[in-house]
Image (tube, rainbow, N blue to C red; front, side):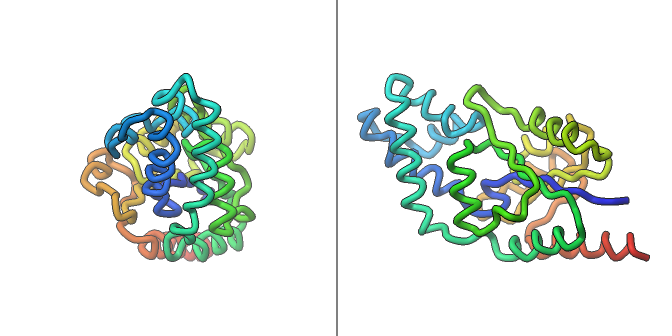
Length: 217
């Protein structure tokens, strides 16, 4: 069986959740004129960053969005690299002629900034981003399946959140729980019964190598 992979971004390809929180805080607190806790910011996740800003400062959305992207880009230097092993893994998948896609809840601007910063833009056959209105990962995965025409049983979705596993299951594709982020909750991921759960990129990479070697044999 062939294999095609769709990746989440934040917490899956790189440790960018702290970057998002820092950029939100720097951009929004001066406009909201109050302190924002990590929990308050994280509670708005699901929609894209545009949705977070809309929820926190609806009357100052345009300025908040401009400030957020500026802060996100400037602070990205503190998070300059993808997780160790990710670039090599993606290069390997392209050599195997897999379809490799990105399905993230992030907005388009921050997604492009991160993929460019990590030097990963050229590895993805498609990049599907989030919506200001709310979570749309299931819809985005279905878009990829429809656009490619490839059998859904050949697809795997890799993400670091229980909602990623739920989205994959809803689309009838396999789910890999990426529990290699410092903030990953492996127990919560395991409760959703993914097809695979890995606590390191290297373990996931080795599974892929084994799968491809078995296919050749």
